[in-house]
Image 1 (cartoon, rainbow, N blue to C red):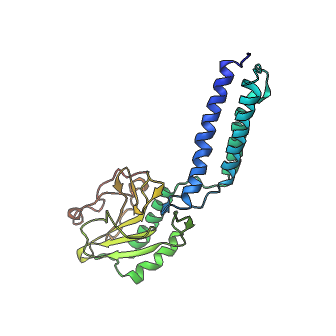
Image 2: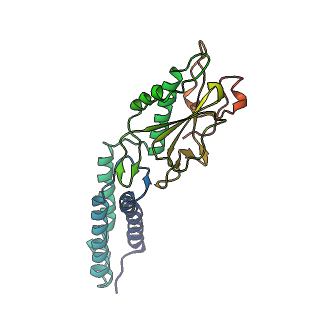
Image 3: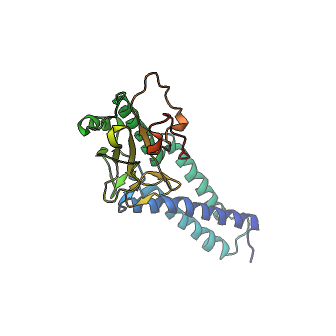
Length: 260
């Protein structure tokens, strides 16, 4: 029996593995997103394209095995080229479609929305206190767009706000709070406020609602009383660590490692 070269066999095996990993994962995500409590996806992915690619993969494998290997076809059998061609064609189609997509994941989008809220809340601060009235803070949510999450396969339409008082630091756990909720936690005497959000951690794509976090650290922003002629913080220091003891000292708190 004549068999193709090892190079051809290896190319087919690697192509099959790549297709199974990429499009099998896409199909799995599309199915899970329809039932997961929270999905770190902006829109519901369609299962059609990965299902079509996987179906064509089954046909290509059948042609290569039954029409080529079983019958002892030599190197020039065109069926051995189907899997590599399918992989290249599918990736090219993905590249073309990706041009119309925004290459930002849910964690980055949620973080940018949180920064937007913090900036607007900071503008409401006076030189002696931060804002704490929900009626004043609620309109700020309209500037944030919609949360970059799906709930049971349905896109979320708007952020919600929860104001807490007499806090000693940012909220690090919020059981029972819905995703897309901005937690505005005000320190005693309104000396500061910590802003956090319920969504998913950067390492989680599907699961129950949890605090927006990265590498195990909750992402938060600090709102402080306005200081005349205060220089704006550097963009890279948007997410920072600040403890209550620092609120009476310098305004720059200290940089955090919570960068994307």
